[in-house]
Image (cartoon, rainbow, N blue to C red; front, side, top):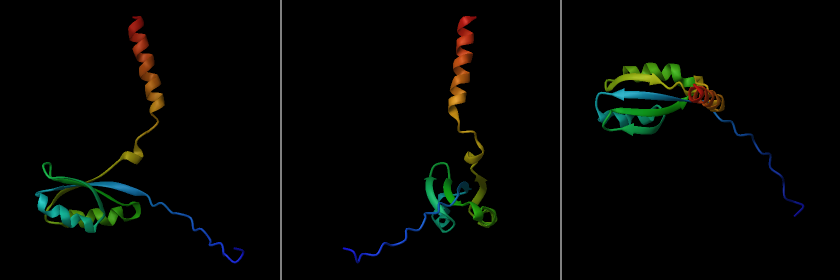
Length: 103
């Protein structure tokens, strides 16, 4: 058992990912979108797909997607820009409700 070598554990690098919403004229072209990123959701009725792509590739990818014939418009998700601290929002709404009940 002493001869077992300990292997070095490499750190796991998590890449920043961005949500990209791609609106199409028809549902036929959505299968081709898998070349550009990971398709997480695709709506056949609303003709849009949700892709996750690497953050450093977004600028080039948006131009490539807009050039495709079946793509109507492309939007980038803004979840990173939103404040996700909801505890302060709950405190504020509780205070507002208490004030309304007192009056």
